[in-house]
Image (cartoon, rainbow, N blue to C red; front, side, top):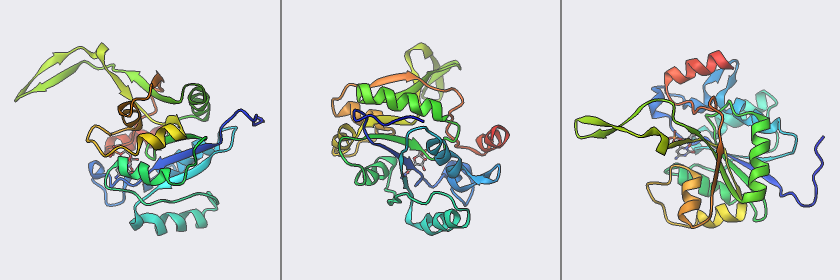
Length: 227
Ligand code: C5P
């Protein structure tokens, strides 16, 4: 069992699950779709609960689904203690709402509710790295050839110049909270971008190739096979 030294910051996980999942073509948002007998969101939360150091869970959800989720948790004896703030207009606004529940001086991981394949060991490593450097995110090199759309056609691009960024992204909470005081910018599709725009140094570490974001119906089939 891991012992909490006085040097370590308390840990929070903000799991964003307030998207409507328009690319999934399903009425039920993808985070609630059941795979291997459990909603995707539950698989994701369980990865955090399996870490050796305790973490406070904050799930951001639209008001429309809160009763549905609470009833699910009650019926299945899942997750007694958690906070359930309301989602916002974009992911940025959803995270901002969640940060109201995170104090300064902690570590906070922000993770997509639809990335159920992250492992507890990998999470542990990210939290430890964030403790040291303040702002860290996993990223993987591109494996496919890429092309830049140019009018009706496309031109080749150099893939070695790009990384594909994943979640969770983990931060000293006072850094993330300060960064989220900026006004919204359309480039804010993840947290690392918000923190870097605020002027803080950031770090990327090698991500897990299978830590994919379940986005399309094909991804769901993949998830079913893997889980
Ligand atoms: O839309 P996208 O795939 O980028 O969403 C990434 C994550 O952000 C998903 O887990 C989704 O539920 C969440 N999200 C949110 N609030 C929004 C939009 C997306 O919590 N307004």
